[in-house]
Image: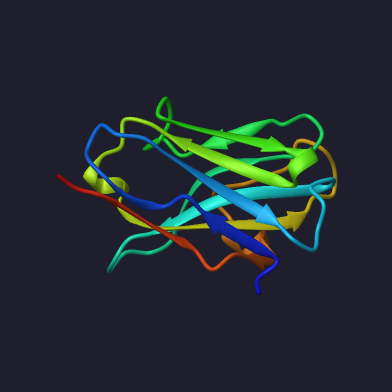
Length: 128
């Protein structure tokens, strides 16, 4: 089993909401930057959002700003991605990923190569 496990994907109508979860089994969230990425059929993987440790600073891709919210629950060792006002173009497999951050406030949605640990993904389909 992967060290990161995503859940919460599914089929939703445009305008609807989903909450994705990323549960860490072997790691604790301390010192980890967590990112959400997605890959649609025939497209390259793109960064969606990330959250750093300690100060919980976050970054969002322009395409999801104002609609998606990332959060973490250290007690549950879980990171969430709340997705509202979903659009058909949000359809993709969503992956969470993690890397050991060198200092607080570090995360990125532009450099997926920095992430050392990846989940297996959860499918999100936005369709009427």
